[in-house]
Image 1 (spheres, rainbow, N blue to C red):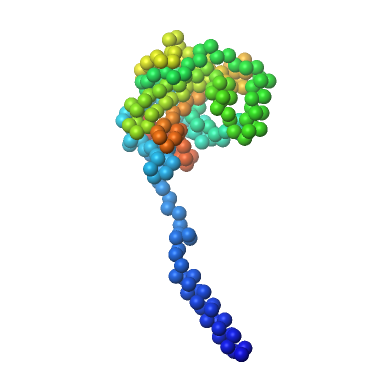
Image 2: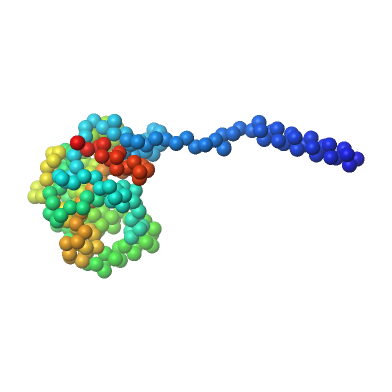
Length: 244
């Protein structure tokens, strides 16, 4: 009897091993790596944007300044002080550096009369972001962007995506730059400053820079330049976007 049990056990073990070898191996197959060289954002194989898809290139928003190389100034960087993610590029510039529209379009937003809150109120808003573990849209748009401009470029930059650009922390917005105004590529729309920052709330001239965003929107959602692109290739991909 014991011999029979042993033979049965060995037989069952062999069947288990054979079945395991015959099982599909998809679950242990290595993940296919997708090359994101040249992509401006990549969500999946059907929702993405490569620089080759552009109808026209756009210019930098400020002359004599290149895309920063420091990753904390580029998209996808953590912004822990407001529990958020950076969706733009920060161009450190001297105070009142002229800022230009990167392409033609229609102004959606312009708030030349914006006034920074005091530093205690500013800190209170940041505490709210920590409690929520995110940056609420109202705090971001009406407090943290400071004096800012949003331009609708329509479908003139990318055929399948509506494109908008954002220019934030301005010291001054150019006269006549109001919602509904048509602007041209390279037109000066404002001057660099630090409104919307802690330095702005403290009423000093530190931390001057242009925060610039560009977003691409279609029926599936709204995406920002650099979204999901690895940091080691992000700057090179963004550089491809601009006139040389």
